[in-house]
Length: 163
Image (cartoon, rainbow, N blue to C red; front, side, top):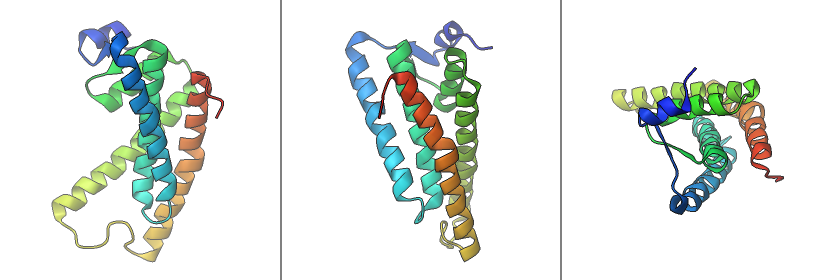
């Protein structure tokens, strides 16, 4: 198990200074909401981007939680470090399972984007065949309803947010 003190020594996380906390938490409060709204807005038109935005809403609200409750800021290897810190500080297997699932989806799609760019494909990345469009729409809906929404709800509860 990774310790918080070890992550601080490695420079992967740091303690947030008093003067920085409001700016830092406000940023992640707003970005998590924006990403969630983008996820919902693009679910049918650009389902892969919807999944990426859904994951980022999860990632950002996690960083908000870590900052508000523990006064810690993620500095390096932000995605993996955020999950490590969450796992260490919040002993909730379901929360950890959901963020790890989200991260795997994000990595899969990010790799697809990088490969498509490298190959300079001219095919429309998001629509392709009708079958693929339908498949990714279904995946993005499932991701939102089965991963993103339950995760956001659980983290909001920990944060004491009743929305």
